Image (cartoon, rainbow, N blue to C red; front, side):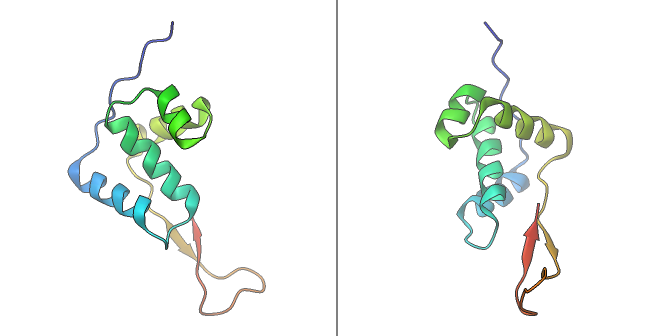
Length: 94
């Protein structure tokens, strides 16, 4: 049986940012989903349970847990509008 991953250490400042991303309507859904994964990992949930709660694969949960552990939250980056985009619109890249 695989050993459960330890709870992810998340500084309070990062927790606030991640919670804001999960509640925001202005960030991409993928970024909000990744923030939710990290927050659940910080609460000590097993990767399998996080996968079930989020509807994602266990491998995806492990990927984002490890990426966060390696470098903290990845802030969204605004990019210029793509082809056909209005000049006032903003696209996000995470």
